[in-house]
Image (cartoon, rainbow, N blue to C red; front, side, top):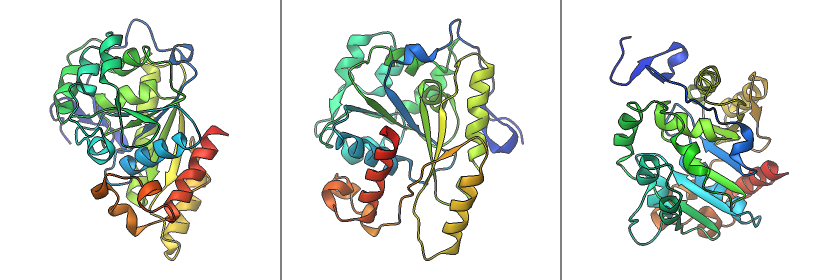
Length: 285
């Protein structure tokens, strides 16, 4: 298949930037601070990345963790769902364009609708940032440089767009953990793409230590044999750390965004609430 724009098709269907110039200085783990930085990422869309980012942020905050969420998806669904009531004057676009400006980053942080969770709002203009990054000498390090100005949170949750372009590369480069939601066979097949992208970041000298790749089974319907088969396959998938708790299918989940609430507030008795709470406990244990 031929190349298109900034991307070319690589083995295992990963979309990889055509060229990548490694920065002069890599991002050693010591410069990432003690924060846990979770990037919710998968090449495939519709697997539950934003749902996981929203509910993991809420679950961690309920454990009295100081949480910052960052919406880097050009669809900005995290922001639409639980973003600030007033339209943000500064967004992740501004931060990515001026990653060395710590004061701008601090002004970009807003209160989300989730108690205890701050947010750097997303914007559709992130599609422009994707192209702009491709013209810089170190297109995968802007987010890491920006987060050097953040040290007063326990956890950072990054909601990534589908695909494996420069925007996602930035999240993978700064993450201590990558959470890859898996809702079916097609999503399962994309794990290799995430692994290959992380490996490429290591080869390019962008990172000196790979993040932990954690898989999270989502939309589980215990009545369906395929759900059990996927669970078994995740346990056997080399190079990954499957989370012990999966997220059960819940009809109320589709209603929560329309109420601009998480399930913790909208439907506290939902099975997914207990599931995400258990995932948060596992991550901090």
